[in-house]
Each structure stands twice: as C-alpha cells, then as structure tokens.
Amino acid sequence: MSVLTSDTDLRDLLQNARVIAVVGHSDNPERTSYQIAAYLRRAGYRVIPVNPTVSEIDGETSYPSLAAVPEKIDIVNVFRRAEHLADVVEAAAAVGAGAVWGQLGVASPEAAAVAETVGMPLVMDRCIKTDHLRLLGQK
Image 1 (tube, rainbow, N blue to C red):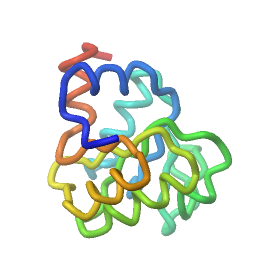
Image 2 (cartoon, helix red, strand yellow; image 1 turned 90 degrees about the vertical axis):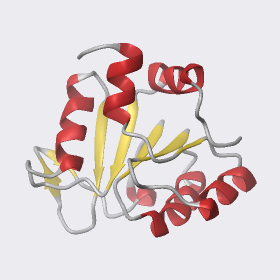
Image 3 (tube, rainbow, N blue to C red; image 1 turned 120 degrees about the horizontal axis):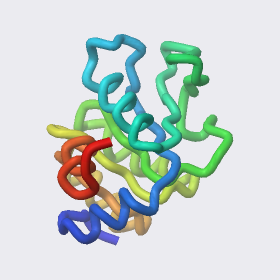
Image 4 (cartoon, rainbow, N blue to C red; image 1 turned 45 degrees about the vertical axis):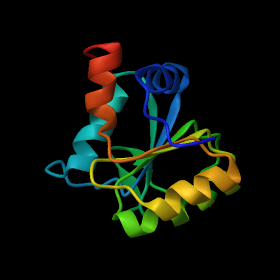
C-alpha cells in the first residue's frame, strides 16, 4: 500500500472504520487531539486513547501503547511529532491495524517507506476531522 491521497480512498477508509486509536490523545479539552477525538466519538467511532502519561480520558481507558490495546484498530490517528511517525507505522503494523493517519504537520518520508514495506495504508499531513466533514458530512 502507498500513501493515500485520493478522496475515494479517504472516504472508503473513513466509512469502513469503526475503531480509531488516537496516539497522543490529550486529556486537556483545550488541546486539538482532545477536540478531534471528541468529534470522532460524536461521529460514531469508538475512540481509544493511547497516551502513556494518563490512565483514563473521559471514562475511557488510556493505553500506554498500541500493543496494549485489547481490540482490533481500524485507524491509528497520530498526534505526535513527525519524527515519531515511522515508529507508529511499525507499531500499527505489528498489531494488525488497518491504517495510520498522521494529522496536519505529521508527515515523513521514512514513515512512507515503512508503510510501503509493511503494506500499511498511510495518510499524512491531513486533519481527519476536516476530511470527515468534507467527505462524509457534519456529525
């Protein structure tokens, strides 16, 4: 798989996903990761926080890593600096996640190479909320 950029691919990914793990999910309502995760919940997704510094966010268990998440993940939404994206792609592939979505500013040629090697669909430098609103409508 390669980096996904077409509206058709993005729409298919968003329509078929049910569980989204948010790596770097903050417990601070002022943070973008918190706000986008809240939007995804309202849109009907099961959102799993992945943040080793907190144990719970809004009643949901926060896991220290993707490997600790006890269920299948359809999309790993990444709120970490770009230099961490390749490692997240590797971790996502190791747990059998469906795809990795790097938020705005989260892009890396190394991550694209890893995604190609492991066959992981990858979205980079795009806001999942903005694309969801644009492609699937308001929730």
